Length: 215
Image 1: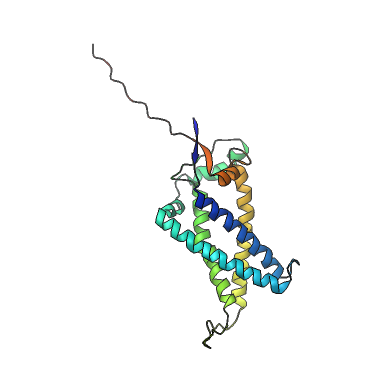
Image 2: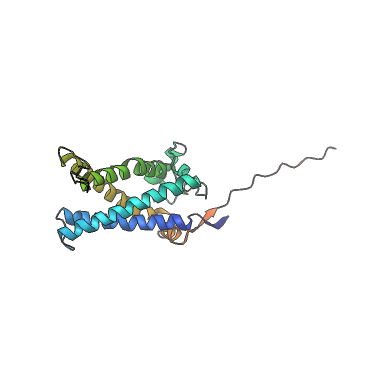
């Protein structure tokens, strides 16, 4: 039996959609900085890219505080439990209308593949983009006290790392959008991230053993 419950809080939805908007805007302005698009102009694209980067960093700091203060960071601890069933579902089961092997609950919102993906996103990809982006922005920029903030021999490796991270982020966004269509219906996951509510299976109650009267 299914029950409609709140899976995503208001902050989770705000964080998700603000992060999506900022990442897409950073990708758009990043492509313009590289000359692939022409909309704002190079100088304005750089300025807007930097502003969006500061907003994303502020959002990340706020989200880190929220995750640790609420204990929600536990949602992203990787696990191999049920991993094989999840892989078989995505490779075969999803095309045979098989039931999803991982039941979503308020306390466990992610399947094993999502846990690993989001864990790597948070501890590898976002730090790579933020650190390389800050190094890019403050490379040999003198402070108002005349001290070079960061002095690095070459921007080459920083640029490569930042561009590689950006392309990995774009690949993640494309895959993420596709995976949102693999819920109960094509729009059910998207609807849940907008409203916060989703229909989930209630746990089946354990039958109580009845005592047999002695004759």
